Length: 34
Image (cartoon, rainbow, N blue to C red; front, side, top):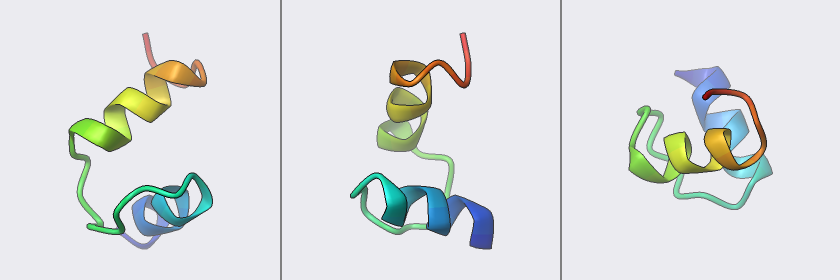
């Protein structure tokens, strides 16, 4: 969860610590997931 929060903070997302829709959308946008 700490890593998720760091990722969220880095990209200006709400820091929920959960793999939520905004997090997954950002990961797709930057090419981390298909």
